[in-house]
Length: 338
Ligand code: PEP
Ligand code: MN
Image (cartoon, protein in one colour):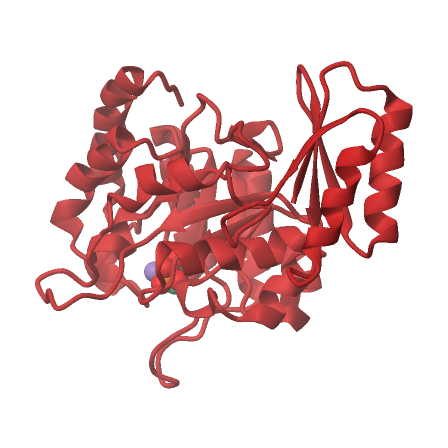
């Protein structure tokens, strides 16, 4: 339910409503806007009608239901777009945020060389998997903590922020020690135990859409994280599986403006996994800018031919430089900058 306070309602009136919501067994999520306070009352859908009684409380203007199932991720309660801060970066603002780096952290030389290259090209965040969810148990599984340490060293040397995947709830403390953003991979989008634990983590979360996930399911997964207390969620469109086989996935560009209509959360695009084809990535990156993406995630490898994972979709550093030059030219059209 949304409890809208009258413009000019006093602090005492707001606090009283918050207290009453708690007494009824619901959690109060106050949003202090410029003109008025609105309070989300979130909890068991059964019995929520009782909250209508709050219309009689002093200072309350109206009590209306939140129609969408994603109560906290949706725009009914919070209409302004939210900005997720990563150090001094603001994801979801007019600042466009580029996350680039290899699919997997493979060696010290590989990650330091890539970090240096993507930094020089203008990326603000270094990506690289240390825990890799692979289709085959015989494929490279990642360097684990050693990989995290290498990412931390690259951050130290370049000042880039780090995003890396966490696959299990148990690994959250370890990965949090080394990273700025915790990535949930497509294959874990509906790992509800992981999502709940990330809701208690003190780090922004990059939530990737699963290859068979609908937009609503993506938003419900974000809701799991936010409802546990962590509202710093960045969504990522990374392609879905369709009958098309020329591309690895079908990059669902329309999901970006659709998500902006449905949610206040920032949305970034990953054309690398979205297409799986190196030659398509520059064009789809520009398309993502035009579609309103708040940022990009792009795989870059100094020697894609020898990459341990996702070589076919990894750009060489010089190709990434060209992509960034192109993106830079497009950003002003969308009133954004790097
Ligand atoms: C990745 O970012 O390397 C990755 C494994 O992506 P996804 O979870 O989208 O497949
Ligand atoms: Mn990858």
